[in-house]
Length: 415
Ligand code: SF4
Image (cartoon, rainbow, N blue to C red; front, side, top):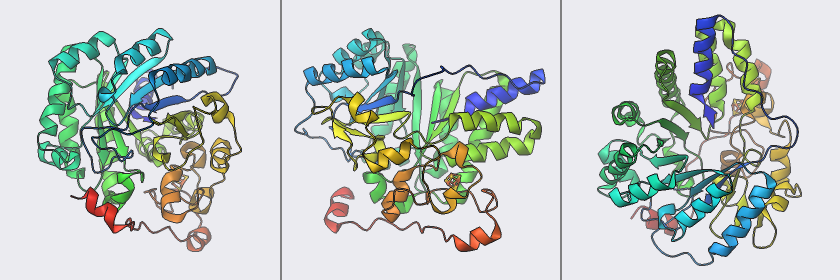
């Protein structure tokens, strides 16, 4: 996740004080422990078009029991995992969600909730507020009609927005989670305004990643120019807030080329701050799959992140998460933990590799079958990534082809 507001606040401070602020010192020594996104259940009351978990509203057999979840939590805590993001499916459908959250908080985890928001009525909002989650993210994909089309349920927008308002009234820190595609890009300005009007604390701009239904619908990914225009607007909005001292946060995810795009945006305005910002972005390091972020699915399978649902590293029923996570015998995991990663094509020759990390390997794999091919979702041109003319003519770009899986699957999903 790229913390746009954090970096732009630093630029605002630098502009005010004439010196770039020193970064907060990271903890030294030891390996980074990942933020764990935990899909407690795959069940969901919605069947959204871009759902990476391919969730639906029925029981999925073989999900971890409460006792098994507690055992995993003990291991995560002992291993030093700092953050649990409780997700799904729809986590509010998990019968023991609040017991799990209480236990996590009692153990000292930063505990967040990721919900579609449609089940948050006044009673549920009271319960969530009483639970004191550190953060609750609710997915909103556009204005009413767009959102309902995405979420495949008429009324979903009104239900989710009502949930956000109820949480806001109770002082719960909330965020809008938005996935940008060519089907809902036109609604992005509306959502930025909605965030302000509703007093939402955080805006998470996610690019489309090619996992689950997001892969089936990858032919509707945003075009590069539309992505660039959306990011320009996001940066302008975040900058205005940073200058005004607002605490609203803007972050992006699922396309780490955003770091290079932000660096160029800052460089055009404040060339004097480009070098310190670059140092900050290199320290951040780009894509965190398999290193700074991990995923456990509802059946206990561990994945390098939520978008790698089709790649299992091991099951917590058979081995502790800590053992699975530190095991580099899996070739994907080994490569993800390398520094730099063994990427190929234009990513290997890109001047921004140190701050992008080679972006998401999921898109590369879904389109080429090679974990380490270029990320076809990179919207930067050859000049921007510093390719020589010789390299540019040698390295043909991976074509962004639509999904062509089994017809049976497509029919079910577009019903
Ligand atoms: S070419 Fe690859 S490494 Fe460079 S910015 Fe794009 S995705 Fe990142």
